[in-house]
Amino acid sequence: MGLQKKQIISSALSKHLSLSPEAPLGDLGEYDIKSLYLNILKSSGKRSPLKESEEVMKWISFAEIFPIDSPTCFDALSGLNKDLALNSVLLGNGLTPSEADIIVFSVIHSSVIGLSHLEREKLVHVMRWMDYIQNKVDFGKLFEKVLLEKGAFELQLQGIKGDAKSEIDTNAKKTVENSKNKEKSEADLSMKKSDAGNKSTGKKESAQEKKKPSETEAGEKDKELSVSLLNIQVGLIRKAWKHPSADSLLVEEIDIGDAKLRQVVSGLAKFYSPDDLTNRRVVLITNVKPGKLRDVMSEGLVLCASNEDHTIVEPLLPPEGAKVGERVSFLGIDGKPEDVLNPKKKQLEKITPNLFSDDKGVATFKGIPFMTSGGPCTSSIPKASIK
Image (cartoon, rainbow, N blue to C red):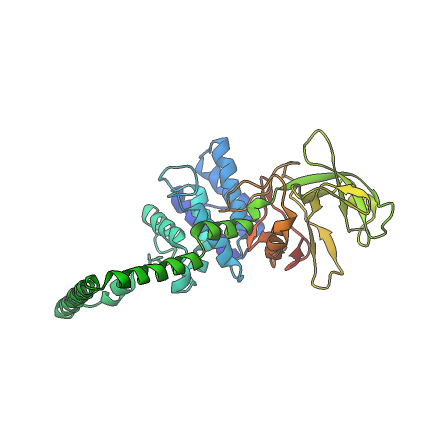
């Protein structure tokens, strides 16, 4: 993250916590957002409750990896939009902005300003939240004002005064009245149609309704494509060995926090030795249907990133702070994973094309990071496919 962005975050947090913006913090270039926040918080003398502090750290992780200048920034904003659908602020159910709100606002502000009108319309909850924050916190001239989008007719009336606006209003009313009169005439004419005609029309409408997919079917289709169907967990490879009858395969015993280790067969023999993988932390899907690969049972799928020609392949790496067995989450995407994925529905095949690492190597689903309690899962391969 650039020095200018860090200066903006520092100034915004200082204003929020009623600190002097000139408070000595040293060289901001040495800080990441987390250390910057902790130093400013220490200077303010404020102490956050443990639960609130953990939530702030979650949003700091989001801010750290937010793709400011990347094409995937809109996907990340869409995830934030879903998260704000039922909340006025990022933390809790209250109305008071927290440090998390200030940090995220500061990081995404320039990206939102650069969005098109159509894109802003799709982010109604983000726009409402930003408008709320800038009205609750006195940022001075630190940020350009983010305006809530208004309806097209309202926008046309902006800047029109006196008689001109009155004339438009009058013409609009006439148009509405004429439209109503026309609709009434058409309705009267329609009432005079024969019963036979009505029955014929009814049959046509019925046939059209049958052709249209129901909302339930559409919802089921979206559900099939949701990453929430996958039970993605953090694991630790306790032991690995060569597959007895396949040179390209390795067998691993992986700890996911259960009493029993989970056995997984992976096609990693060309890229890693068993010793390379032993005691390595990985990310794996644990609700794939168990099955044998060349006569050896496999009960999961280790997620790996690979470059375009698949000459470089590596398992995704969870952060050190992630707990073994914890489920990976995606901001703004809720839902319970399937107990076992149904191979006939090809759910995995539909979801994995949307898994990729961004230009910083952060693993994502449609640009939304793989998040754990310790931060995002990553890869040393930027812009890689994940499967």
